[in-house]
Amino acid sequence: MDGIGVALIALTALLIPFIILAGWHDADPLETGSKRWRPTQGFFALILAVEAMVILSFEATDVFLFYIFFEAMLIPMYFLIGGFGDRAHEHGEKAAATQRSYAAVKFLLYNLVGGLIMLAAVIGLYVVAGSFSLTEIAQARASGSLDMATTTERWLFLGFFFAFAVKAPLWPLHTWLPNAMQESTAPVAVLITAVVDKVGTFAMLRFCLQLFPEASKWATPAILVLALISIIYGALLAVGQRDIKRLVAYASISHFGFIIMGIFAMTSQGQSGATLYMVNHGISTAALMLVAGFLISRRGSRLIADYGGVQKVAPVLAGTFLIGGLATLSLPGLAPFVSEFLVLVGTFTRYPVIGIIATFGIVLAALYTLVLYQRTMTGPVKPEVAKMPDLRVRELVVVAPLVVLLIFLGVYPKPVTQIIDPAVQQTMSDVHKKDPQPEVEAAK
Image (cartoon, rainbow, N blue to C red; front, side):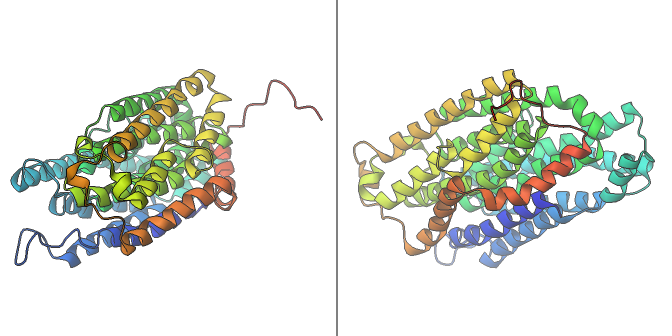
């Protein structure tokens, strides 16, 4: 493992206990004696299976082994989405079951197609390199003993990148994510976007850049444009959402655009910021989505219009929801600000136009986050939320550590960056890139 893998394994190991604790009653039957839900032990076993596959993906240095874990995690995720989906549905249980099945199948098909294309690229890589070992192939490329034809390298790169772009998700391969998050329980939605999707962006750094450095540089302009579209498109669609979970899903698409933009800016600031963004996005999205899940479970509705005045009856819930939202819009002093700033600085030094346009995503993030808080938490208290209880002890145990981490890493990110930076420097060396020199030297 390098520092990037260590940071993401730490994120996964941190979030899974909170996901389990937050979903403690998500698999319980709707009523005594009901058989409409699977046994609770199956629910938790599936979550732990996903954790295992994700950690093994971060650890794998064998390309084929990585592919196995990359695909295997789809199976437990399919059952978590389709079998243990959200119960809050305005059209009843039958409609909810139909929507859950649709979201689960869409998630599976999109990722299976990406995985099959990647499998073809994995086989092609073995034919060309004669090995599945990431270390051996990277060393052979560095020493010059393995010299891929330009066309071959580009096709292999595209096969890998397509699968990772689906998983990430990157526009226009993103459409499975809003459905999957909308129909999942809040803890499973966090598992998808804060844990599983990070495998896609991690693999871009680990496999695309290290195995195919020249093809990565060749594809960079197109990928930066796609990332920029993801940032603006995801944020614009988040502004217009009526469903809380879909809003968070489109916000995540926008954030993944920042991560991918930082990776392919090919600067140390951009790649350090992108890796730090993976960690910070996982924590901030977990905080916001889990509190939103607690809110939805109390009211029984995902629609923003069904809420109002919650801060007057549940001030602790509203306060933690606000902190999660402010982290999502990258408020200075909270963890995502540091990573987003690094990504924008790293991009601007090499691609100033892309960096300038991407800053509009920050403005839109402030808009959809503050509008969400205003419509759900402020204003007159609606009769349906008048007796809503505040956060319970179990829910506070879930949320409080995430809030503390958001503040701590916003003020002092060094514990994570000092783990990440050496691995980023190695990646920059693999693609034979150096940071642009400033046009004006600083005064001594």
